Length: 431
Image (cartoon, rainbow, N blue to C red; front, side, top):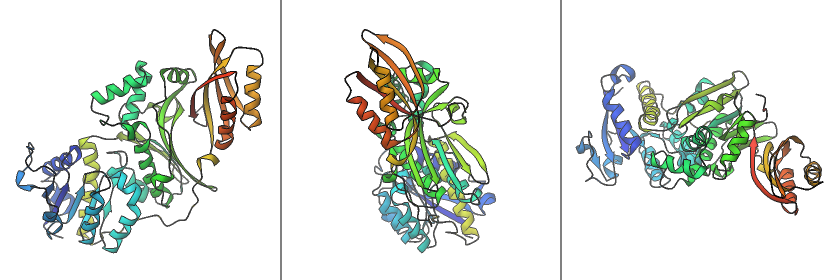
């Protein structure tokens, strides 16, 4: 084992700064935890002139060559984000036999398989615990602690921004636009929040989780995504009346007929463990054939929680180096499984409509659902307007393609004035 493990950090934003702080804070602990000193060798940034309080400026560089050509650097920590130049840097680092730790969900969701194969070829570690759910340990438990299980379902809240928005809408009665503005003001949301509120961020994370859990490569393009921008305070109110909350849920299921992966808003019964996950917290619910149910809960983002996950990976790499067993756990995608189209997946639905208030309307709507094999589980009519009534339907499990056909037929009927909301519902409202 080397007396000193040298680490290069690519990026010194929020998370990169957290990694630097933890390395400085843990200096005296590393010899006992990994059998060697751990130090920062270089930090790659775009702007070397920018003042960076608490950082040794002699470590700052804007030249990748200063890192890739330095044979004394053992581990590259990539916290830049995005596909390029991160992919190029990670590829070159592995080709130069440097171990890599990354928090880059975009890159792992799209190119994780090829990078893991490259790491295996060079007998290097490529670890990415921080790519999903911030500080919550989930990748390592799936690959190691739960390796004896057949994982059949993963269901989670893996985006803190949308969870914060929905919490504010639920607890304070805010409309979506107001809750989004508050989230932006508090710094939880990006200047362009599209990836969060449209479910794209969560989609990349569930692609990674499904790949690890089901031992089959799932990419972001395989994930069906819906966001929360159409959720209204009225929908939140109906959820409460049904004993539910609305959450943006990432779901992956592994059944005999194939894998399904999706991100959608969902009515969750208040008794379900995920219903009490609020604000910017994340949680991942896992079901294994031997384990049964388990939930992993904690901070889904932030400087130190995410840096904590990264440094857990760094420590793992150092321990592997000590016993010359790097690359012992690489890509675990060894199966060939079918991925189900969203049209073949069954769901329950909440449907809020505005109907013409006249005899026979409800019967016609019910007949349309029935003719498409969609059974009405519950119906609520609470609000009337001149000539119209707001009616809510809970539709029992039905194949997506048949449900879409029913909705299309309803939209074409003159007495259906509006279909205001369609939101999926957890299979068991009486959880």
